[in-house]
Image (spheres, rainbow, N blue to C red):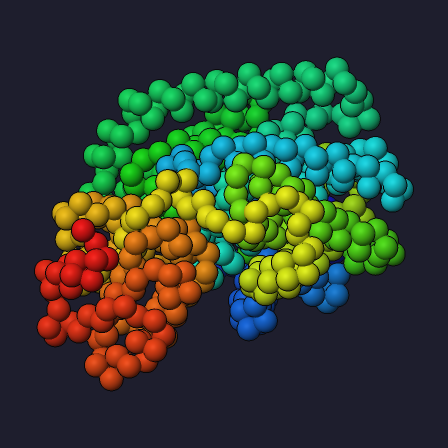
Length: 577
């Protein structure tokens, strides 16, 4: 995926072209005698990392996605200040980042994670991909783009940003809420589709000779290669990986190194089969995602991916020609509006068809209203193989900046946006029921919700299960949810979607073991509004009166109350059997 003009900066500094420099032995001269200019990549990386670190601070303050900040940093370093130019070395590092991103995405594709929303994710996700790509193609043609550019634009507008959506939902504690799980499921379907698209793009040898026959041949080769990789993955999951990684499980460092070895092994296999390195990395991640160690591997790989992605997106900003993008500003604005409005509308029309109510359907659709980091990768690949020019990459990059920034604000204010539209009846046309819940894909009824898996919360959850209650345990920390004999849900109950996912309105009781005053008051209030009894941990007796005012049915004073006393008090009140 070598794009741009690598000799632009190297030759301007009086150095030979990159391929000539690499052909010289490293040991030709002692290192001490080599001037620093012999290693311009170190200076460029220094600029890139300094700029990335600076914009990370600003982006955090402004609450915009880091991807947006990185691209802005690239615009400053490249087109604005001219400090860094695209070189072959930077492109190589960027490509490693893309491969690792696909590996990480694959690692998160655990079938267990989206089992309850698998049907809506697969069908609504596939429908959205088809409809959005066709509508995007038609819109691009109306805006005056050529056929090839319109096809790539249709694809670029189709995919949503896994990085942006997951980060924002995770920050709001909504990743495991119902709308969060739907959004993640649709994103994973998109990720599978984008892996196929990247492979097809890599298989294009002569863009001028593209026709139905060549596209069909490329699709056939890609399918055959993917079937071969799939067969290897199936055998590995059944017979190799559990034993190998089980043997290595005593050393986290060994697990990490072997996971990267597995990733690059699949990259080599994909290249041998004529597939893209991205799909090799993706398939490697999917195979490891089915192991019990995948969460630990994700935590280990994530910082490495962040490092390489920072370089990729800053380098992408360096490539962008703002002048050509600004000269097409009407097209940029129309394409951005399409991603922000039309794509969520398509999803809003599809998701309720599977029985999901209005609010989670809307929030899931709203969260996917941006283009993806893979949209930018598709544009970069198109540039690299000569299908489009640099102005096209600049247009897609500008659409990415706009949609990611605006979408971040919409996701963070999702509840207010929903309340405003729902209050005006603007969502009735989509035919979703405004009430009711579909939590965790389970038939939840007469269950007990326990919030906060500290010592008291785990004691309560286990004790209620022993008494025959159907319990759903909630905590923000996945580690605290391990080894519990009940249904678990990770999330922050301060966000309405988490209690919605737990089926609050159909619960027979909600219990909070938290030692957080505001959270407990909010739980008591929402339980009272839902008409559900609430037993709240009054860790400070001075809080008892306020909890009572907010609707708490029963208070637990940790100094006096244990599971037996709680169960007795609630049984006497007729809350549990």
